[in-house]
Length: 95
Image (cartoon, rainbow, N blue to C red; front, side, top):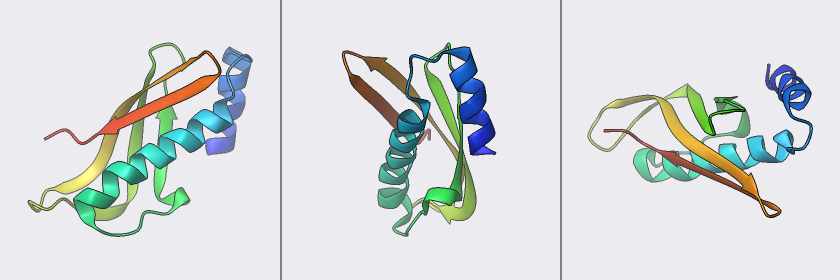
């Protein structure tokens, strides 16, 4: 699924290194998940959707997890930017 998305994104804009952006997004998802849940989230445990025009991303979490208040985490949202040789991603947990 992710390989197909990467191919579609590359056809949309070949100047972006979409595979690196995906990796950065998954790292941002993990860095948001772990403090909330306190358990491991593997690379394949989140399906990332990247909007190539809007600079936004969504992570569907494929593991069951609850934050420290007991709320179930199903997805996380974030933003991305590329420029000056950098890839930036940020993910937040909406309360």
